[in-house]
Amino acid sequence: MMVEINSTAGVAADAPPQRRGGTHELIGSSRAMLRLMDVIRAVAPLDLTVLLIGETGVGKNLVARTVHRLSGRPAERFIAVNCGAVPPGVQESELFGHERGSFTGAVRTRIGKLEAAQGGTLFLDEIETIRPELQVDLLHVLEERRFTRVGASHALDVDVRFIVATNEDLTLAVTEGRFRRDLFYRINAFPLVVPPLRERVEDVPVLARAFLHDAAERLRKPLRDFHPRVLAELMAHDWPGNVRELINVVERAAIFSDGPLVEDVDLHPTGEFGATEGKDGTPRAPGGLLHSPALDGVRLGRPRGPASLPGRPAHESPLFDPTTEADISLAEVRRRACDRAEAAYLDHLLRRYQGDPRDVARHARISRRSFYYKMKRHRIKAATYR
Ligand SMILES: Nc1ncnc2c1ncn2[C@@H]1O[C@H](COP(=O)(O)OP(=O)(O)OP(=O)(O)O)[C@@H](O)[C@H]1O
Ligand SMILES: [Mg+2]
Image (cartoon, rainbow, N blue to C red; front, top):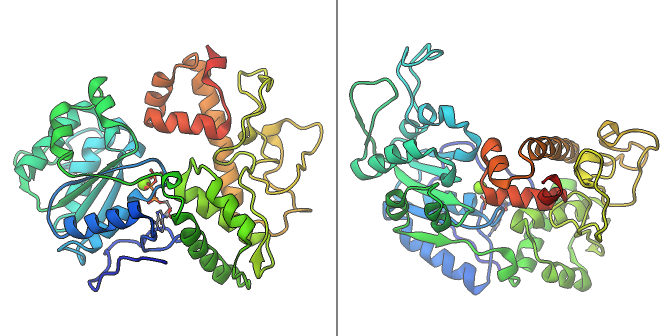
């Protein structure tokens, strides 16, 4: 059974969510998902600030959009800010905007995301990455519904519905002094947990089928369903990358399958989520990096068989092999390139900070949780840098 939340109202005014393999609707039939959908329906029309908590890829962005869509302001703007991707130095001006001449480089007045979202919804993702000084300002905005552009002399009223998200345990961030207790209490009034996929395996078949139908349409292939053995395999997997990982697995399977049944999926493609740990004794490469698949571009994400070209350093190896991968998509090549760059960058930081997760995460401006997740994903062990 597929349960979708439909709204009769208009859709978000900004660009639609990325479409690749995904759907616009929240899909799921597990008790956890049904309950979540009930709560979303109940809370969406109220102008309450909602805190979304969940691992990466569980669907926080999709939930945020759904809340907006079912809110009293669906035709207004939905503005999403990934706070973790905004360098600390420009967070303030990004959120609140700035007046011309308020700092070097502020050649013209710019409105911030808060103002851009006026009348609509502001989605603040990775909220735990907001600088402490800015956390105070944000608390004021939430309480007073007023804010001041950087360099401005007067405050402006703001009518915005806030949705914030985190993939970290915020109580831990509070205990460690990284997140203000008062702001935490303010945003934690309505916490909504989006459970990891492994805790709702009943959702795996409905999700996988929806993504398969979507892929079949895009690839113009007669793919009808999964072989029961494959479905069982999918349900037994632990999905560290959650729904996003499932989309990728289905997408790849669809590319390599002729149908009508998908008979084969690769749950452990090298360099992907949950790649099997190198049966230990994995040698540490000279640079401190374990044999990371992400630095080994040729093998990265390859669904089938290695194709390394001998005698070339991994980072110079081609990103794909035209003889065996004629079908490869640009998205896949881009993903491999990203993975490689990410692994090289992490290797650099790990060396610089002697494997200290806190320093590396802070420097990279990612949460510690996503740092650990990336380490796992690239099969890098911080301990080997100490
Ligand atoms: N219940 C669901 N039904 C349909 N698609 C889903 C569902 N949950 C997640 N997705 C899809 O999975 C992908 C990842 O979801 P999303 O980006 O919302 O995750 P996230 O929790 O925001 O991840 P991150 O923490 O990495 O930002 C998206 O393409 C989204 O559309
Ligand atoms: Mg997200």
